[in-house]
Image 1 (cartoon, rainbow, N blue to C red):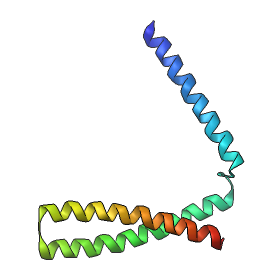
Image 2: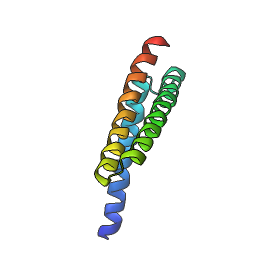
Image 3: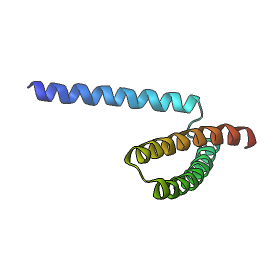
Length: 96
């Protein structure tokens, strides 16, 4: 009995959160074409920058070789991905 009650409670909370997300999304115009275009271009720019950074890090790792270095390189590559995505969203929002 408790399992069924938990299932319905979880489903109800999930549906409420989904409803609120879409309601706020319509207000912020999160689902219009411009939003989709900006974020699609931003992802493309971000992944391109990340690919260049990962290639440079891979070459550096091959030359220097160290397990600690590998961790820091991958961590910094993830940081570059996030920062480049943020910058490209700001840039493309002003441009488009």
